[in-house]
Amino acid sequence: MSEFKNYRKTTVQKMRPYIEGEDLTGISVADVDTPEEGGMVAVSADNTQDQWYVAKAFFQKNYELAE
Image 1: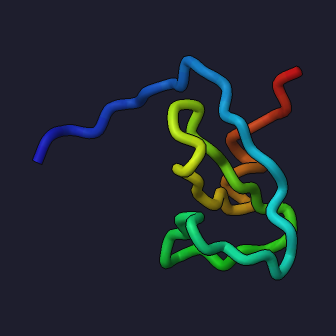
Image 2: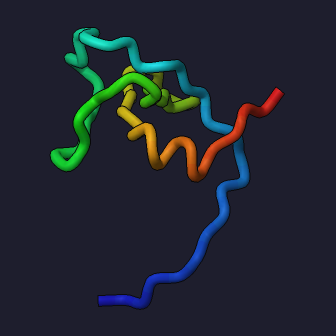
């Protein structure tokens, strides 16, 4: 196995708020995540069908609004 290294993103990430109880069909959710208010749904800039849930704690720690 190769060594882990630190990488910084060079682009912004398009996201929208997760809405409590919404149908997440077609949105990837990691087994360790439980969707909750404050979480976000991210979408690929190259493929709008590629969407995934971003946990609330991870979002709050790693993202800020880019205006």
